[in-house]
Image 1 (cartoon, rainbow, N blue to C red):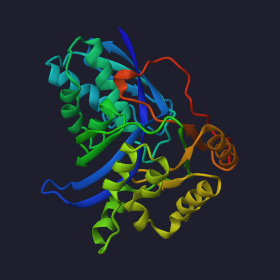
Image 2 (image 1 turned 45 degrees about the vertical axis):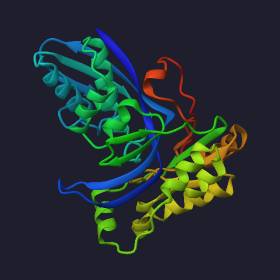
Image 3 (image 1 turned 135 degrees about the vertical axis):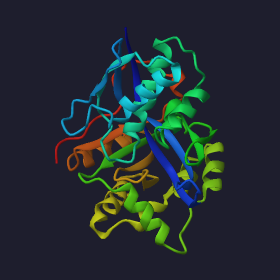
Image 4 (image 1 turned 90 degrees about the vertical axis):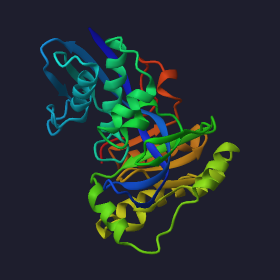
Length: 305
């Protein structure tokens, strides 16, 4: 038996670190959106307990180090069926090390797929609780859409969707960033600037795209090493090309700009796509349960650098 799911990319419209938790994690406040850039995840059930993943990229592990494999193992254990296994094939489109939750979204797609294939019938809430054992982004990725996330990222409040005309251009430089290093830099910094999350949510509720874009902010941009100047250069380039606002997503290194309309966004993607291999045009998507599998991506990959 084989099942298929999309694993949608995640963008952080805002990201704040508000403190440290007793469990060693950080208290976060984030506004997140799923967009039309995704990995294709195909799962075939086995009955020998073996689980393996093939991502088509030689540097990505296919064993227990892969979050998708861990997700399948955790699901079968929670189901009480440890004799089950799975072959997982992932067609990667989401850039690796971009801050777009590609690995977490793949894991969430595996949970959704196995839930359907085995007939477990678990609720999204139960899948999110299982996902939290795998990683902080997995609970959000189970359902996706537009959400306010608190705690480690697992306390989720649905938000209204982005305006229909909104388009995003996503651009990733060739380097990636160390999540652990950036959290350490945030912890050591005093007098941090915090995003206006409440104002951003109010703008979203009012359908005020310009107001939302002005309030986008990521605290990790304030602590980037000097070697990461290209993040700021991409952000400025997006603004110069017509973006209402631009910000780094997650712990980077991808940067995205918010545009009001398809034409200006498409022109910006074409321009930046001449310099950056990983450059995409996308729009917001609703919750996973409301989306269909089988269409071609709305995003368009950029050209080689």
